[in-house]
Image 1 (cartoon, protein in one colour):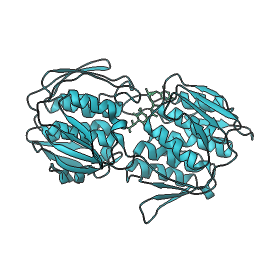
Image 2 (tube, rainbow, N blue to C red):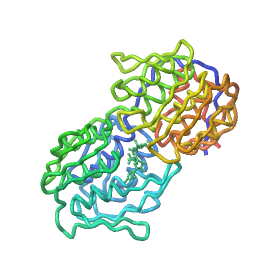
Image 3 (cartoon, rainbow, N blue to C red):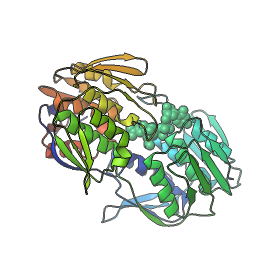
Image 4 (tube, helix red, strand yellow):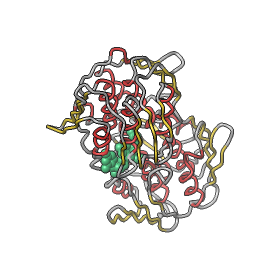
Amino acid sequence: MDRLVIRGGNQLKGSVQIHGAKNAALPQIAAALLAAEPLELGNVPDLLDVTTMLGLMQELGVTAERETGGSLLLDPRGARNAQAPYEIVRRMRASILVLGPLVARFGSARVSLPGGCAIGARPVDLHLKALTALGARVEVDAGYITAETNGRRLRGGRIILTSPSVGATETAMMAAALAQGETEIVNAARDPEVCDLALCLTAMGAAIEGAGTHRIQIEGVDSLHRARHDLIADRIEAGTYAIAAAITGGQLELIDAHLEHLAAVGAVLEHAGAQIWPTDRGLMVSRTGPLRAVDVVTEPYPGFPTDLQAQFMALMAVAPGASVIRETIFESRFMHVPELGRLGANIVLQGTTALVRGAAKLHGAEVMATDLRASVGLVLAGLVAEGETVVHRIYHLDRGYEALDRKLVQCGADIRRVAQ
Ligand code: EPZ
């Protein structure tokens, strides 16, 4: 397994091309199952999770090939209702996103329960509740979800989500697109990736209103057709580089990033001492003055995203003062805390709250990546730690960040990837 070797202390300066959003790519690749005609997706990032999802789609008879312009052509004409096996689903939980499209297209589906991961139990009960509300009979047995419509078409209904789950909203929207009649999703997730999926489904011929609000209405159609859609930029990748600029006291232009997708993050970074403003290519983030400790609570979009919590904690680890960081989305998303401690960070955990006392300096050490966003939090800390930091198991990084080390080197970081 590869590792990253980082020598801290360099200020990052330059520009970074933000790739297409991982969490927009995964549901839209699954959505290709809904039509009997090809779906062409532009701005698809080259990530391990995308490769895993394409592997699952291949199992389901959907072929994928990169076009010359870099877009991805998905061809579902050979799609068959195979099962989504445990060995794929356990590697990537987002595999659950094929469940809704399989039931909507074929009237039945058999998908392994994803199981938990490093950040929490990750139940899928809201996905199953959505399909039940649309008329599917859903059972869970021996680690597999079986959903059946007994040959009938899904029918529209009201889906009330107990929490604004991103994945469950996406499952509901995709299944409802082909259901008979009107569907209403109440307490829907408002994330930009949900809106982008709605745009993709609309391009395929779906009738969707209200994406981006807590109430989404879908008028089912008989079939969906060939379409092309370009993915939005990855706001979490952009937020990660914004924090990289702040933590190193540098200045980075984030090409294709949108301030409105990072409003909560921008506001917090300004309180922490950074400056952030839109440019005609995207977003500029700079820090010249001292850092300040700021409290953060992670919340559903448009609040501060849980996917930037670890990265922000690395920043607070070197900000003078005390910062309280409360994680409200996942129950154990603090695997990065003991690893940051190895670099000299002063962090005390109390349940789902971390008290971070900014250290004057962090010192390089060997650390272990545990999950995607924790890993990049350790890289950010390594960029500012004195001496050498080695981040092991960086395949976690490759799941969600395209060419992270190359992009950082281009901005002045002293970082190299070493094959184990
Ligand atoms: C999506 O995960 C993202 N993944 C996650 O990004 C992100 O952290 C999360 O949304 C929250 O923003 C993708 O889009 C592929 P949820 P998802 O359903 O859909 C509970 C990354 O690093 N819940 O909004 O799985 C759940 O346990 C990843 O890129 C249920 O209880 O998140 C969690 O506490 C990590 N029942 C909360 O809701 C359900 O049926 C939010 O989960 C579903 C979720």
